[in-house]
Structure formats: structure tokens, C-alpha cells
Length: 208
Image 1 (cartoon, one colour):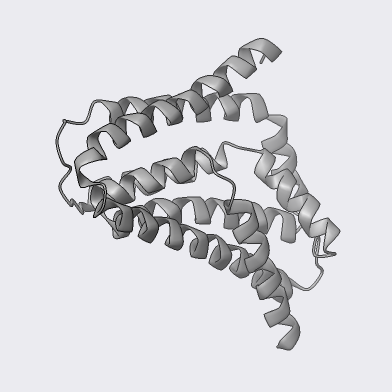
Image 2 (tube, helix red, strand yellow; image 1 turned 180 degrees about the horizontal axis):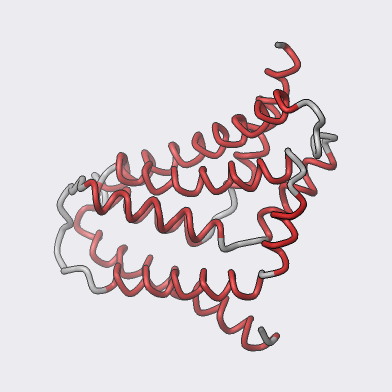
């Protein structure tokens, strides 16, 4: 039991570390939290946390065939991710001007969660990051499936904790930056679109 708890805590630390760097998902979650509240932002983060947990499971359980497939199709996944980012940027940029209302619609929330899940899943470098960190900590390819499961649950919990702070941070800023929300939304759209364009340009430069 104590060993499982230790694996859970290590997984939580790894999950938070993987989720921590700023990127398009973080920008999207902050923008949605500011425009629609903490619940919507947390839903966005949940999609990314689920993808992190999936990649953590691949590394923890030693699912090499999944890892090989994802890394082998990296250019196509990267292209899909770049196009998805451009679509999200376009959708954010064309939203009607004015102060956004605090909308909590099930369909939109599910779409936001699916978007962040797909953006995270289309970055095969995430599996490499998990593999390297797990190997360095002696956690990879664990023969005890109970410990591996505790590790994956920890990754999910650590990632969720980070997105929880992002969501409530964005909602906190909403109350102080209400007048500037339309401009912030458009700026976030430009940044997210820049990430998508950079992904596609790097593919074109390197050749798919």
C-alpha cells in the first residue's frame, strides 16, 4: 500500500511537470476560463489531463506497439494538431465582440474537452517525455500492474491539479479584466493560430 502511494505521488509530480509548460492548450484553457468561467476552463484542462494519462499509461505499462505507432506517424499527427489549432484560433477570433457571457453549455464544454484532448494527443513528443522521465526514475515497464495503475492515476491527478489552478486563475482574472476580454480573446486566438502555423511550417520545411 505504501509503495502504491509512493508511485501515485511520483506520478502526480510527473503529470504536473508535463502539463506545466505554457503552450496552446494552456492559452486555450485560460481564455475559456476568462470568457466562460472556471468550470469551462477546468473541462478544457480535463481533456489534456486524459491525454496525459493515456501517454503515461503507454509508458508505465510498456505498450511499445502503441508508442511505435504514434512516433511512426508523428508528421501526420503534427499536421492534424496544427490544423486543429488553426481551426480553434479561427473560431475564437470570429466570436462576437463585446463582453462574453458566463455560458456553461454541455455541448460546447464537451467540444472544448475533445479539442484539448486531441491537441495533446497529436503531440507524440509527449510519450517520449514520459518515457524518458519514467526511465530516469526507474518507473518504466513496471511488472506490477497495480503499481503501474497507481502511477497513471497519479499522472492524471497531477495534471488535473495544474489545470485546476489554470482554470481558477483565469476565472479570477475575468473579474478584473472584464473590459479587455474581447481584445484578450483575439490576442489568444492569434497566439494559438501562431502555434498551429508554426507546426505546419516546420512540417513543410522538413517534409512530411
